[in-house]
Image (cartoon, rainbow, N blue to C red):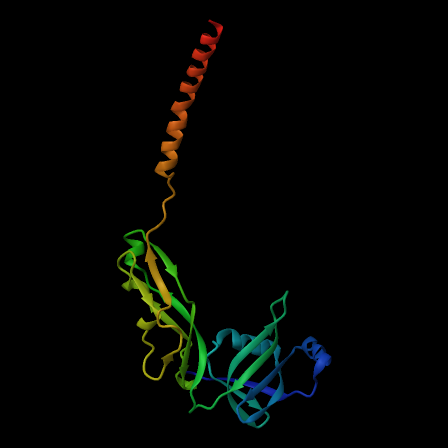
Amino acid sequence: MATIELQAEVRTVTGRKVKALRREGILPAVVYGQGMDPIPLSLNALETSKILEEAGGTTILNLKVNKETHSVLVRDTQRDVIMRNLTHVDFLKVAMDELITAVVRVDLVGDSPAVTKLGGLLVSGLNEIEIEALPGDLPEKVEVDISVLEEIEDSINVHELDLGEGVTILSDPDELIARVIYAQVEEEPEEELEELEVLGTAEPEVIEKGKVEEEEIEE
């Protein structure tokens, strides 16, 4: 996987004063990890936002803080409720020779013959899965080819995914990824139609009976 470089500085401003930094185009952040104390950081907000939009949650970043370089992953982000601008980022320092867990996005690719030829309805299951691997082996996403779904009721489950050597899937192996089902056709139930027919023929009989009873009374 390609690595991306980010330049940061140690941040001395904390608490409510951080709002002033944001107005100056500075993005507050923190880096933490095993064997180190958390370090508050300041980054260029515009530059960092562009980089993180392209980088996935499993992309290794080279975070340069003064003269030190840390291999990190983005562990959490906070955004403004209205404008959706980044307001804070948490970076996790990783050891490239130690296994870590991560959540990876699942993308369905290709066309299912059961949908295009048989008119089935594609139902998607999990849109992300949890995996374990060395930082350098983490995939940015998992692409699942749905062209194997050729018949109605064909499905793909987690245990059928192959992410290659060095990557272990931690999600439930029986969880659904994708499935093709019969498309629902809205039709009036036969029972309701029969009931309407019965009601339609019953009303004249009741009226006729009423007329007979009235005639008998008059006699």
